Length: 397
Image (cartoon, rainbow, N blue to C red; front, side):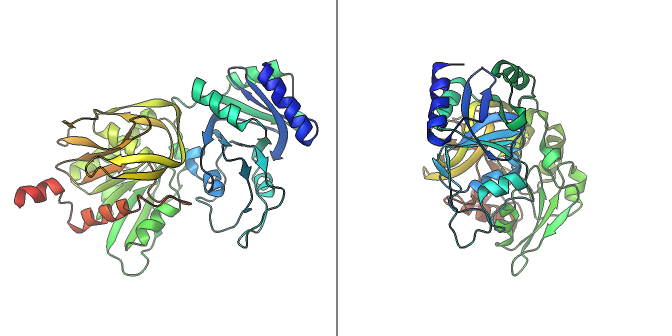
């Protein structure tokens, strides 16, 4: 146990009684605290989220499957939990780490506390005074495996570290099918139907088809196992690939399906995991980021206009692509359309001669920000033009 960990344990004891829960990282770092949510044990990749709001959406985002999420905002749970804001039918995070959980929730929409919600869903959590130290540690050492232990799961630290090291990592993890819908379903257009969209669910958030429905899209949500034939059988005006968890290097099925969609010339839009699948379909590689982007405050620049938008992110992998100029793909020239201004990470791709584009972030952005919501309008314009690209339009001008 390090000196800093011992100080954290003393702090926890002074702040709220004996430390009765521990967070253990695979490199041996230990943080002491008190149970929050369910008691027991859990394992996952340790990551952090920098959002100051939207904790309920984070908990129910399928992209957090098999991850223990630490919230960097100091106060979590102030507005409780309601039945309107979940992004899926269940909580997906493997574990939850906070600094100061709210003692009382206060919001007219709330119907229970976050603590009760975590207990209901069996989510093992911990409150520690050192979330800042944890975040700095992950930024320096990178995301890593971790475990949260409380109650009867407590054991000597050395034993807990070994158990963490035996747990599965995120690289090589094929998880999309584990979070995807088992059967297709339809989200009807709100108002007049203008377009039919085939959306492949790799871990889709409920706000995403809602944003398309607001624009007159009837969204047919398909399981992650959908083939190109399954997608094209709907004769969609456009095809969408969603966000999702896991290592994109394992997603051979969705990559093959998307290649069939691109060959058919259907307008395509992908976000997050869908951006990585698009990159692989174009022949690009992917890699694991040191600690990833997770939060609602990432500055992204649209390289076509120079405009900078603040965007919501949740990804630990990224696409490898040349940042300058265009590059060749099996479907014609492509370019990097968006770049993260913090670390020059690829945040968007587009084909120049075919109607296909993607972004690495979340334009549906519940609980926000909403700077990038117009990307859904861009997708609708592609479908309205029947797949004509800007390049083709300029050639005909």
